[in-house]
Length: 624
Image (cartoon, rainbow, N blue to C red; front, side):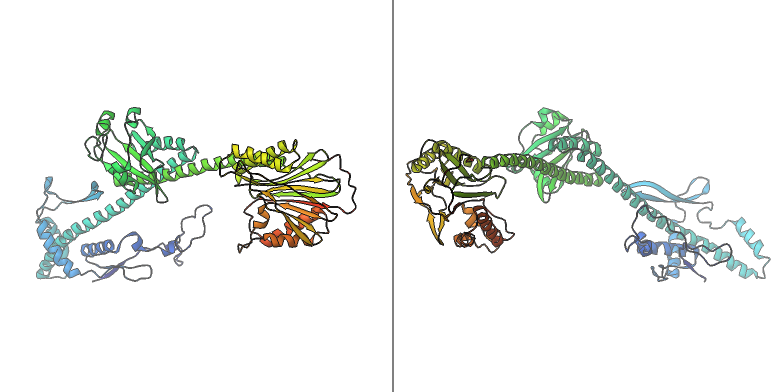
């Protein structure tokens, strides 16, 4: 028996007798990357396209049909299939031929055999073979006579001719049985290929539908517009007429209608739907796609009568879930009973996931725009707050003055101010509890109160008392402020101050430091609080530093505070410099200490240095 091997090759022999040349591959797509391990056809295997079982069936059927020893090998010549047992197949064919003999008679004496091609339970075609030979007569007498006549020219005896004719009868029978089996193999493999094409078309259709939907959703940024568009588009994609989208309420229990397509207002507002009472919605938000064959009879449907009035029959419920968090449910309704295919169910699930992402992105975009608006307002408020601070320190002999406000955020509760009091100068440093907008508004209130009362009253204790009364009456219990307020008399020179719960100011004189902390408690808490003032005569070379707690509370990466000790060291190190240089040196030491660590609070400093031998007359151009 001859040995035949089936193989496929892309090589073609040159017409001029030259060696075979490799076949050209298909042109690459524009800008396509070079073929890697996945993309390269060199790594493609026959078994990647047709499974080994199907290859074995094709080999066995072909071998039985042709009576040739057959094998299927890979690109390297290694067998993919097992050798076909021809003797066993011959016995099987004889049995099958006997079983099918005489079956399925058709007109005009033709024998007809048919193998259906079935995909997803539906017959899409068939392969049919017909024989002109009546069943039971493999070869007609005329054919036998013609066969004998041709063999008569051969040097064969009559007995040998009879043996050959008998063998012809047997081979024809065997071939017919093998042909029947091979017919089934071909039909089954065609069905497999058609099913793969069917799945491919479904995937293409699904991707096309999702692409169209994503394009429509991407055109909108408003959440409600996305919901309205999605309700309409999802119905169109699935070929249904009506749909609705429900979102979870803030408490995470009620399913609230936010969009409906071709549904009446009466149906959409028929009543509340809570997760605790709805099996359908509970299953949907857990990730299932729930099918309801008939909305009017299904016991899981709460408002069955409303569904009957609306004309709803079948429905699909798909949960919209984003990063494992349920957002809501999309509902699709039909007006006639309809069974949805697995493809449609998968498509609904994909639409729900896409819609969940679109909703969350729209919400984030809305928050971003809202934050931008708030940020813009904060910037405007910060500019207003900055304008409330003195544009530059006043010039009044014999005092050298410098001040700086370093905010932690856009808005803060720190402030400093200089008040023109005839031939005196008021100096205030304050800190309001909290941060942000509330602190900035409270700071403006304290500053305005201090400016109003300081103009008419020279007794500092009375000024602070009135500020305390005003703040206590107009604020909540948790809203208060600390305040250090002093008045400079340039003629003597002299300082009168009162401290309302603020960080004590530091007076450096001859290397020694005095803390100026006498006064009373914070303002804005106790309506009946009394305060006291203190008077200090100043000397040339004295350095006064008033500051907020942001200076001493600033910490490095290890959480260690800058502290009062380091403030004193920085103050002493620069005591012989100007007020501006002293202030810059303290801030430099602070920055050097905390490094890149961000300050947690606003920092405000006012430095006043008494000049040596300066003219004691006040400057008429004092800036307030």
